[in-house]
View 1 (tube, rainbow, N blue to C red):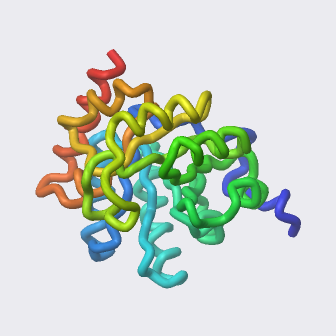
View 2: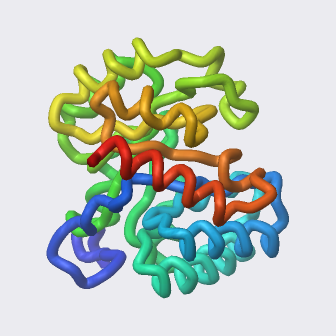
Length: 226
């Protein structure tokens, strides 16, 4: 089968951008049962986009987990994006994929996934945002870390709000999602940069009550858009 004929779902266009614009990213430090429970709690609280980011699991168990999360997100009317593994995104019937900055070329990923799939890309500078915008194949850019966070240590120190503003400007019409150390109290400052939404890991995945924390994040996003 040619790359052009491969598709995630038989739909003519990219799925609608999640509203509210909150992406919950899974934490690969959690066991699968804990992870499923937290994703389900987040979706029940109103999260409409989940990014499966499990770097340690081999293909078979990762596909099994992706299928379980696909069932949870489908019940909630939420998007499921698979990090890096385009093959598993296809196999699980996900809504799309998210590419780390050192992953496949975005144009190659788009050819494999089809025009109807949502495709995101991690970036770490305004220059990377400009180049991705010129390429014109991704639906959103995920920039960070904005604030200090343990999950993004390998990407260096936090870049801050001013760097986020420069990225939003360089991205032009492409949506920018902020990530890294974001909690509900920081949402207003982040969204004031003109970015399109926020991604979180620890704020939900490490919370004593992930549903409650999701609600707080969604309330903060709602206040910014009102």
